[in-house]
Length: 421
Image 1 (spheres, rainbow, N blue to C red):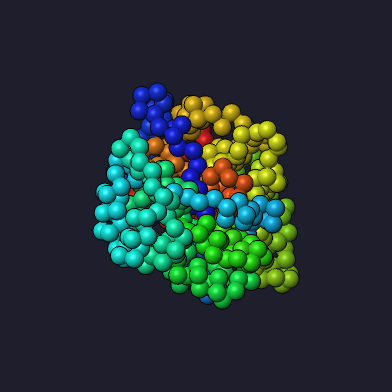
Image 2 (image 1 turned 90 degrees about the horizontal axis):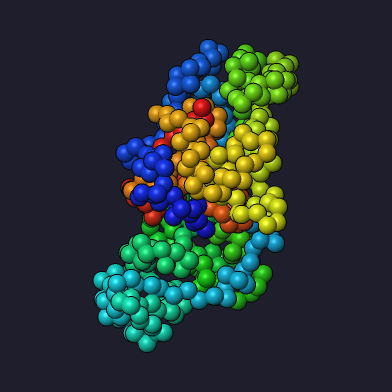
């Protein structure tokens, strides 16, 4: 499910340090990086500008100071103990209409394409009105029967109000990749058809799914309901491998992957894989980059927060993650947004684009208020945790996926890059 990190605490019209207010440049629509930007250009590999296809879904990225990466798409399911289908199925969500009375809300529905049968059902639904606003408990029959066009138009109007976040918080799929995302889920054909009937067009070549609670209530078998929940809440991620040939400059790679005084830690492994390539054991040799990342990342990657977080601590989110990337002992003061704003101003400098392991990527809304943070890994791969929920694992993803996710509700998304001094 889509989940925002904290943002309200970073809204600083007057009280925030200037470092966080308006922290990003004009809207960035593409994400680029280059070896030259990092000042490292090993001569043993040719540069390419397009990924080299291996199989339909496995690709090789651009060559840079990080070497060359092989990117394998995966999906992460919730562990059984975190998949709470009963909780999701047991709560009805209301639609909220700020600054609208009931008649205006009904007119909005009609303008978005509700049929007369659906409008009739909504007129007799459970409405509440107060202080110039209203809300309604929509019948599942209405929610499940909306056309994709109507659903997209109506939800696009609703989700600008934060009060509707839980009611229509979307999961998303790439167009043409729905079946691939559901691979191995064990969902029945009926459940799969139900899911596909509830998809509607989003931006950036996506299909959105916002109706998990009514969908789960429509799935009567408990085991099937659990399969449905786990499938639609899967997270897109990457397994990323570094390719090493017999002529690879491992010292140059160690300079990149060992950033943060870890060169001596990673060089022996890089050399050992080069020796294998020379000996013909594997050509090229492949290292899962998890072995090259700082211990903070190694301990968390592909895991969910409840598996690592001590009891009684504030939930770990994207900011805590991004600003502890190189920490031997995580700094929990980062949970305090005032402290984080001061830290950004004192310890980080703004850069034109990320090119070094661990560079911080900050996403902001149209006002310049931060809404998400991530760390640059290499090529266009980033490390992130999306929100505070324990249902959100730490993952590696393409930068495009991060931009897609946050543009859903922030079409004027802005991007800024920072490096620790």
